[in-house]
Length: 147
Image 1 (tube, rainbow, N blue to C red):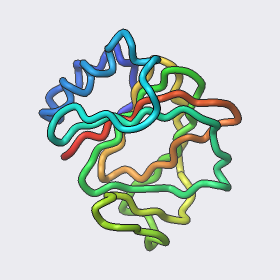
Image 2 (image 1 turned 135 degrees about the vertical axis):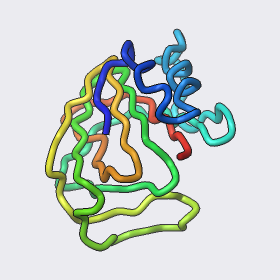
Image 3 (image 1 turned 60 degrees about the vertical axis):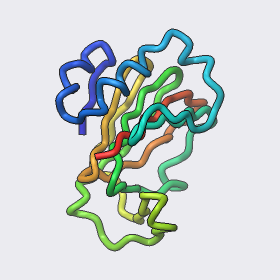
Image 4 (image 1 turned 90 degrees about the vertical axis):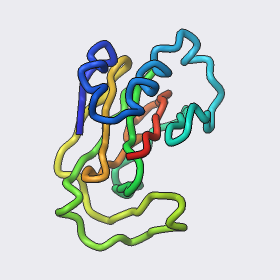
């Protein structure tokens, strides 16, 4: 897991060959005006624009991905994202179509990170995470970066 501000993103550019393009996308001046939904950027990299009410932790499941890094960038609101080491998870309770690259677990996070506007949070396949936890609206971009 990485938690930092977008201004420092270039420090992590060498961790994945698609990170430079992801960080460039997050620096777009029109980012806040993009419509909700998926935006394809290049092979192995797309953005999901999410805008809506946050969830309560008791109404959410922790998730993992095998083939993608979730790189979250908050535009407005505060996203409290729960984390737990994947190796410490119990069995998956829901794993839809494997092409969706997501599995869900009933485990509770062991740590929480408050991701505020201007911050990035990267969750690798080794990181289980529970995003979109808030009492208010969240507007964020989730960069899906293939590993």
